[in-house]
View 1 (cartoon, helix red, strand yellow):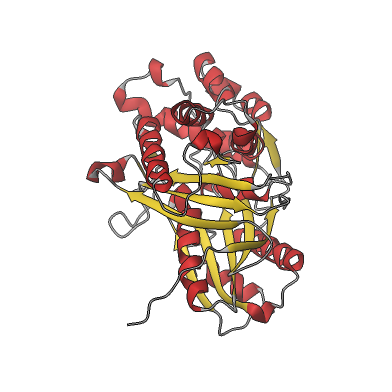
View 2: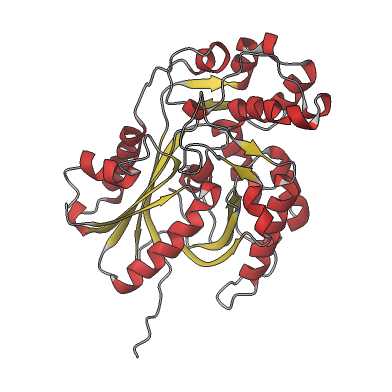
Length: 378
C-alpha cells in the first residue's frame, strides 16, 4: 500500500472584506441606554470590542427597536467580494483552483450552502471544481480548513484551494426591547436575557478569503492538534437549539445559549491542544511564549487575558497583539476571527507561530504557522 506524504498548506494570498456599516460600542450603548442597567453597561464597555461591522444598514434600530432589518450587502456577496480580492492578489488563474471551501456558522441561508452560493456568483470558477461546506463549526473553523487543505493538496499538489470564511451574525442577534441587567443582578432563570444583550455587542460580521497551495513563498500551516467534546456535556456549553429538525419552527429570533463555563472550559481546550501541538515532532516551538506569534481566537478580552496567563505571555506583548486588535476593531466574528488576524497588514517576523481556534460545538484546534526567512507581510 502506498503512503501519502502530507504537505503543510502554504498561504499564497489572503484578503478581508468588511461590510460598510460600522457601529462603535459607544454608539450602541447610547442607542440602548434606557434598556441596560449601569452594571451591564460597564460590562459591555469592557468586553474588549470598540467597534464592529454589520451587514445591516440599521443594526442599532433592529437591536433596540425591533426595526425591519435592512441589508446593506448579502452574505454571499460579501464572501464573493473577499474571494475576488484574494484571487487578484494571488495572481493565479481561476482554473488552477481545484477545491473551494465555504466556511460559515452564520450563512445567508441554510440552502443552498455558502459554497454553492459563492460558485453560482463566480462564473470565473470552473463548474466542475470540487467543493465542500465547512459549516456550523463555530470559531474553530480554521483548524478544520487547514486539515482539509492538507489532505487535498497532498493528493493534488498542482492545484490550489480557495477558502471563503464568511459570518453574518448581527442579523441573528436577539432584539432587546425590554430592560436588561448584569449577570450578578439576575437570577439563574433570567440569565438568558443577559446573554441576549451580550450577543448584540460581542458578535459582528466579516469575510476573509485565502488561497492555499502545496508550496509557495508565504507562511505554511500545520500540523494540527484537535480536541472535540472531551466531556460529552461540553457540547452544551453554547447552543443554537432552534431552527433544526428537532425544533423546526422559530418564533421570533433564534435562541443562543451560553454557559458560564465557556471561559474556563475554553481555556482548558486551548491549553490542551497547544500542549499536544508542542509534543508534535515537526513543532519547533517548546513554549508558547517563544512563538514568533500567538494568534488566539477572540472570544472576549476576558478569555484572551486568561489564555495569556496560562501560556505565560504578557497581554501587552507583540506576539499576542493581533488577537486583541482584531477583537477591538472587529468584535467576535466566529470563524473569521483567526483569519482576520492572519490578514492583518502587519509584518510577521521569521519563525514558527502558534494559532489557537476554539469555540462552541465544543471543538478546538491548534496549529503552527511557520513564517519563512525574511519575514512576511500579507
